[in-house]
Image (cartoon, rainbow, N blue to C red; front, side, top):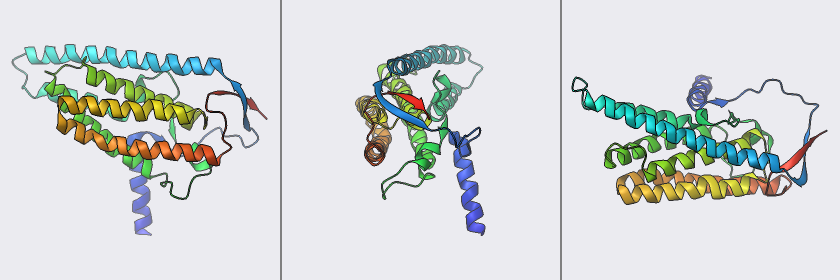
Amino acid sequence: MTQSNNGRKVEKFVNTVMGVKTEETNQSLDIKIVPTKELDFKTLLIYKLGTILQIGIIILTFWGMEKLVILVDNYSSFPSWLSTVFAGLFFTLLSIRSRIFSTLDNTRTRKTYDSVVRPKWAPPPLAFPIVWMTIAILRVISSLLIWQQMNQQFLVLPLIAFAVHLALGDTWNTVFTVQQRLGAAVPIVIFGPWLSALIVTILYWQINPIAGMILAPSCVWLTVAVVLVFRIWQLNGREPLYPVKLTVS
């Protein structure tokens, strides 16, 4: 009984940190969403604009952080490590809650994963926030190393690529987790989070090999995620691999 209570406490803590909703409200059992085979141009445009806007907002925040660091460093009364603390806190916020910069609905929830048919080897739901929390820590450490290596600048190619990676991941979360578009989620996870993670890791490696090695496990996990998303698509009807119009029945 004690182990069960401890397990629930750990799950609650992890879900709270990662912002995962475990209870759904305003849920109607009488409403069923049925996908068609018609391409939803409007939704596709919303995905693109939402992703671009999020990248722009993060880059604008990078500019603001650069100004803050310069301001802190110019005041001799401030300790020299203060700017590093600010940068670390910023990268922590960015790594854990990048979706606050998105205009799309990036709600983290277990609803989709719990409701679909999954392969036998699929990780349990609790594994995801734990793994992502671990990856977030690796992102913070590696990004901070890159920031220091690049003379405490945020507006540099590796960190901008990191911002693109986060935005693509949030958009994928909207597609798969929120809207349950299992078909569109397949190419998006491949050419979005997975491919961009490889690019960011390579860029980090070129600047600081240690930072690249620290970030590399995220590529391994995203490779697993790609296979899992593909298998879920196969096991749940194989809807078209693009955003389709939905009807309510």
